[in-house]
Length: 351
Image (cartoon, rainbow, N blue to C red):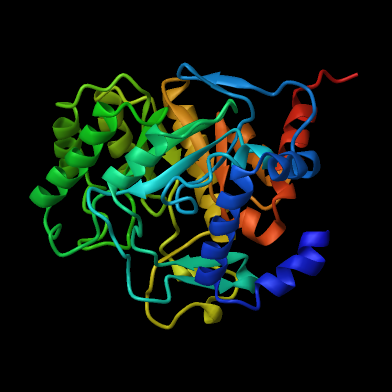
């Protein structure tokens, strides 16, 4: 309640892009100081029964992860375990450094419990991020995934250039043996050409290209959530055929009409929506994927988690792990610990 009543009203007076950079900056500093890590962990660290899970050979101490889009450059790997995250997804990472789209790149829609995300894959590029992650020194049992996307610039304006761009990033990460798993983000709408590879033909070409890179780590696909089930399933069948371990369901909602107060949204389309409006779209696709494919896919559920019950709904729908960002921004870092406590309670045998 301290966060929601005291800190959030102050934070929300500032530009959301400034606040994001502010939190990342201080997250780096606190993460580098043992006393700060101890203090933060004493407040927000999960200390309940064992809730660890082994998924695709990776051991997650806690089944809640920070979604891609917040720690774009892999700078928070030491502080995130202290607030009960069991892992994170860095990025999305691209082949070249990218400044992202014109500002505003983030817009709060407070009544809708949402952010308009128009960052355009802003990141420092694969070489600098890979070097940072390769040199990280942490004794925490903390899983770091890498989200990979195509560079958002004029040099990647068609499918052929996009294929080469994805391939370059994937190749460097594997050669440097960086990260615990890889996610191929085919569903970012905020780039040149839009969701270029979210079609059966081009997804097949992309996964064929990436298959030329030896990879011994789990691989996932970040899925769009505005497709019909028939179109979504066509992509799943291709992902199945190429032997990927699972899917992340899903990415940003691109339909402004689905929020509670559409008049709050930008008049012209300026990026996808995070938060509440993703919740049911994600849950329905998780349920259908689990029903259609059984245990074939690992499913990581993301979208609209603002409470422990929201997270449990995704687990009940069929998610093996959950990810979040917007819920943490609106509800505070204590949300992750509360989710872990609720998950532990859900596992306890009924009396």
